[in-house]
Image (cartoon, rainbow, N blue to C red; front, side, top):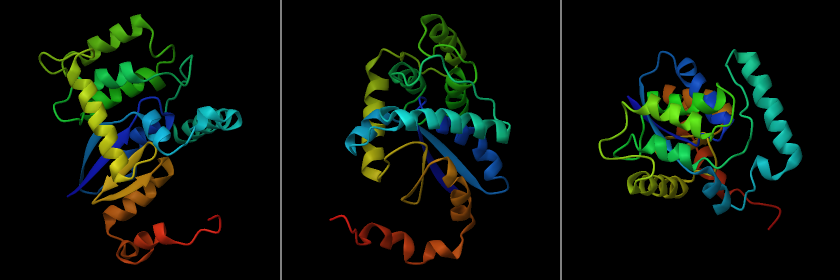
Length: 214
């Protein structure tokens, strides 16, 4: 059985789409998933990447693309009233349900649906209160969104992700290999199936390929 680390931030619509599609794409394979919330903004900043929100035409394209993609694949998606937003309140709530930085699929799905399926302001106090009720059975005893533990777990997760080579979300790590993005799901299946390409030289050779811009 292969183990997949799924790095996600709830602010990403692609994380939601990949979360929904993952079981279907990997149907019939033996695997286990660890969901690890990270702070996407910190990963983007570490690589000097403004992200889609920092480039106006790319931001508009992202909303068009994810809504079209969701419609094509039958995935419910409704944009929140404001996006992007600061996801820390959601990340802390999810990690209040964790002892080690990983969350289960129920917690991940509950928070993702809160953002991407229900519409509205993802950070509105009344909606956060409803989310707290939905997560109440998962929250660790003595831990809540404002306690130190979720903050420490988020810092640790984000740092570990950066060290592993994660530069965006969703990202999937298997045996030290990091695959990025919604469109990497077929590639992830291919890896888990043991395709011969993964034993060849191309993966390891990619970082050292000469650049014409240096």
